[in-house]
Image 1 (cartoon, rainbow, N blue to C red):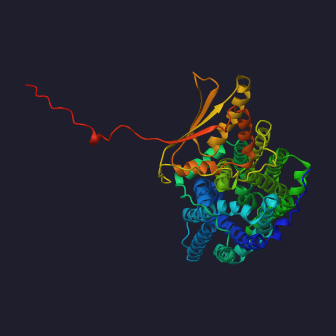
Image 2 (tube, rainbow, N blue to C red):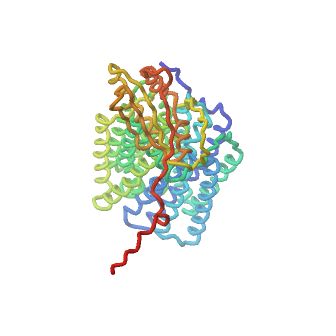
Length: 542
């Protein structure tokens, strides 16, 4: 059994500790702002689905723009991207505060401001989450992800209650002002952080090519695909409680903004308990068992909350979904990070965010419409059934267990000595690898090449194929294309330590005296441009 890593181990690293504390202040302000926005919407609009759309308007941009943000996080300086996002959210928050003070806010304008803040979160999150692996060693990454959840939920446990008190005493504008001020600590911490520069001589990938490479990696990674599906379902079903909580506070338990803040605080307090128990639970249960229990916890809680008219009972029950929320989401996040090499981790996390927050955004809208049509109690009951179905999906599509795999670069590739002068953008490049395989080794060879194909496509290859020579049947040729010479170099640099097993096995099957022969070619068109083609002879019809 692997050695258990203490949850507090990442705090031994100064930069992680500094950024974590600054993020605590920023999260504190964000939750106060969320309370102010949600409660202000109850005053601006009578429609219950408009109240639920406050959460949806924050989650929607994360769903829409996380993929682009993930590609940027893997190709640009992550610290600069986070600073850009923080300054953008600071500007939006100040503007929101001014509009609130002047009484200029309308329901749709409030949603627009929360949408813009969500855009800043969408830009910030992939860079921040991908940077966690740069701040701490890989072996304590799960503890670092858990501590991020602890930090957020410490603020969730007290921030909403304080936010409710601020709204009750001074109005929503004061809550927006506190949020604007909260960005300063994180901006200061990021300015002080000097991450180690990477030595990359290749030009940056274009946005479309970076997105394509990220999609190719995720598509060829079954473990990540399972996590994406389950996290999307979790966000869809579990979003009902948080989306409808303002309505629960106002209509089911007949409270005010302070009641809403206390209930959010109970949810956050449960999340802290779940985060602190995270390491112990992972030792005791499989990842799928924890996720399934999280679904069931939300299902039971939604059912009880739909029937409760007591603030005390509802607050106590909210401890359970709070714990389940952090257990499930931190497990999803950690599984994605531990299943992804550093070159594509930002994009993989952006796919995870897209599915999770897409589920939250769509779910918030659906449960808001249900509450508007049937009432909050029935909407929560329907959400309870949906969450129960999400648990049953785990019997067919389970979340993978953490795997101890080496995702460090293999570093066996050396640039070949070329006789042609190529530019990084030169291409397309066609690659052929010749193998000599005995008849008795063909079944094993084909099985290895099937795995080889997945690795090639995962790392950016196109048009992969395997051919057998008709005149020399012992000769097999693997072919694949890359768009440019730079893409070919990237493709080979992306090979991982875990991939060495496939290559070494293929070399053992190869019966040649030397290693399999590699041919690198560049395509050239032989058809002349239209303007250079000879003009047809003129024929006199007479």
